[in-house]
Image (cartoon, rainbow, N blue to C red; front, side, top):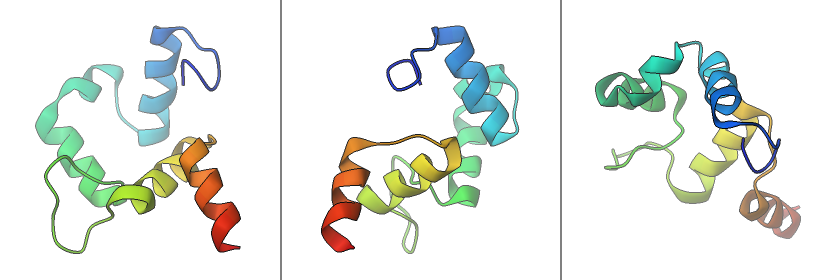
Length: 80
């Protein structure tokens, strides 16, 4: 968010927290964030069978945060 929307760090954290429906402080809670990532299927650090990985996880993150991610845009251009 800092790079794509030129937001300051506090504004970027608030934007992501709002999109996830949590408080900013919760962004650093490993257990809560793992559960949120699993629920939203946006990828987790240690993979779980059947969950989004790689470009699929990035694609979902781009949709969730309403941002463009270059690798996702490039992938979309090659598959459409």
